[in-house]
Length: 118
Image 1: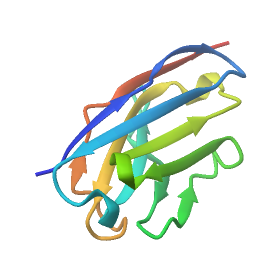
Image 2 (image 1 turned 180 degrees about the vertical axis):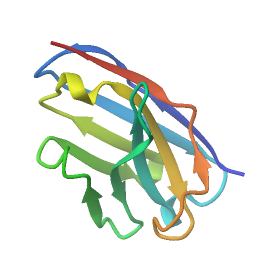
Image 3 (image 1 turned 30 degrees about the vertical axis):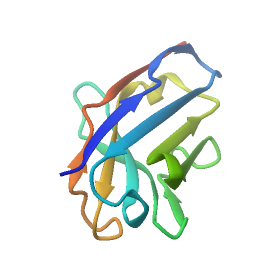
């Protein structure tokens, strides 16, 4: 069983930055693809970014050039650096772990709220 705990959310003004962290316990972190997703009020959960065990990254078009996903296997931690934040980035952000290279996500965190004021 893998437990994921996110942190780093908060309230920030438009144009500001936040860094989210996701600490994993249980399992073999280095073998998982890690992803970040978000869900805004009244909307479906959407993909934000993923990083495979190899370091390969992929991003949603809406965050390319502004967000950076990374991982530190020695600390069982994944990060999402968010720059140039916009009000439309406001959402609950979830990290997730995949045992299938990102084809499906098997474990999810509880989420952390990010609010961007205009």
